[in-house]
Amino acid sequence: MKIYIGADHGGFNLRQQLIDYLRQNGYDVEDEGNKTLNEEDDYPQFAARVASKVLASNDPDPRGILVCKGAQGMGMAANRFKGIRAAVVWDAHEAQMTRNDNDSNVLCLSARLFDKNQHLAETITKVWLDVPFSHAARHHRRVRQLDELR
Image (cartoon, rainbow, N blue to C red):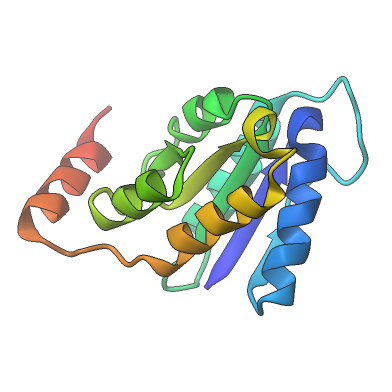
């Protein structure tokens, strides 16, 4: 599984911690930045980079992870891309459900919530990466409907 990860200045530190965690656990991670801390950068550019990489990937199950202060902006920006199902997640249960039911392919995390609790961010990320899509007919139907929205 290929993982693309990006963050603005608000998620800069947590992004780096997650990259280290993922690589230590054998994941193939591509860092979409920001590579240096820039207080003037804007989250939409990183959401666009990650969403575009996920959509263009040849990997059979590419995923994206986006981090900013609140996670909502990243989610809104990423969900502008047809085929992206970005989910703002705050606990392991939501991580499980958004994968199982919604086949989310982009995880959005709040640095405000997890900068001081890196372990919880790692747990949520692991659950989100490990839980497969259920492939239940009703979930396929709903995901297809999402992808057909304009």
